[in-house]
Length: 218
Image (cartoon, rainbow, N blue to C red; front, side):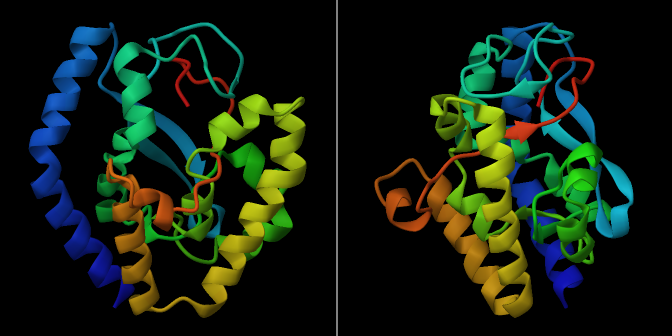
């Protein structure tokens, strides 16, 4: 049932959002040199790696640190808006159609991070990683929180990551198709550019941590 819902919703959303994705592709090409899409290896179900898709938000082959914490100089003008609105995540609907991901599930992380927290991910990756889950909602503005921390990487590894893993594990214990539908609705509402998002997302921050890709994108 969950897989059927994933396929139906992902296909419908891709059709609905195709004009927006094409517009974003044009903006990316006009804004900076490089490909429209960014691909990166993430850990999937049962620790099978796959390539996650995103819209490119950083300068192609830009030099810089391997982690993105807050205001990174590599982020392009258009990329800054796409990251804030989470539009850069929309190509992952294709990952959902392919079966790499689900609409709802723990967010996929890079292999190094999955190995570092292997005990927790042994449980979480019994299911497909997803586009959203309660931890994703709580930490949707994570970069700003980490940028303000004295030691962003330490805060991520010792505070944020354990909390996200706990939240995701608790949700999976009680998840149903109906709770997934409710979470998808809350996620859509949280992304709307209106005051109501503050009532839904209970926003707290989000870091994407990764080894340095070819284009410097996270």
